[in-house]
Image: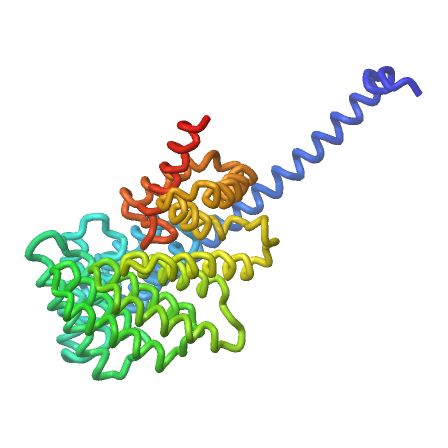
Length: 388
């Protein structure tokens, strides 16, 4: 059959038009059914709310509707439900449902002062109902802490609030949440340059995590890394070395070795040894870092994948700073191949990306050596330009 005749045949076109029309109609019906079902669901929720047997039940239903809206990424709708819960909750007086509604609404406030006022009202209710040691108080205090401005005197207020939460959690032996509170307190002391108190709280948080969760929990692994980073940030390189050797030993003793995080430990150790003037030891650990991360990804020896990029950048920087450009070139080419295959531009572009991450406060993948990596890339580019 002639294809052009078939395509242009009026009967065939008419049949296709009918078929397309039926498909469109079916899709429209499905869409209407879905929209109608969604509308019914919302109307059902609102019907239940508006016909609640008691005011307490109504407030609880409004809070529940807000929670479900948040689960569906509808924060504006959730906020409206919480606002209604607060408006109706006022009529309940000093009631836990009203306190809960205040906290939920505070969580969605962009204005920190407004949020703090709502949290404080909630806290006052919980304290009056259940006393100063109730865990609800600790939950609200944890939230209030983040409403303060840490650039001024507010830091002391935040410290007072998180300390109150810590006292409550110690009383209840809430060891799941207590370490996070201790790290927040340590961070606040770090802001105040009170490094001794910061270290005390960071170490206690880590010790509780090790006891309750065990080393193989990723939260504990990151907690050890963060403690080492704290010591690096304040120039206590010997203390950082001690934490990292402990972390490295625990990784190697594990039944299933986490080669990726072992690689991060090796990179941090290398950076610490650079700062301690032990360049040969630093080189050994930089190479170990790359090998461990390649092991974690099952990478071929000469073709590492994207997770190995920061370890490659460390080695580029190490050799470029020593004017060993031939060695640096090996890792430079591997790093550039990774970026090219990912469609992420050149290493010069990547250096700018790392710098932007630092300036934005997001932090680089290897926070400890990010500036060093940028310097290494630029040294290689300068060398290439000078040597054509």
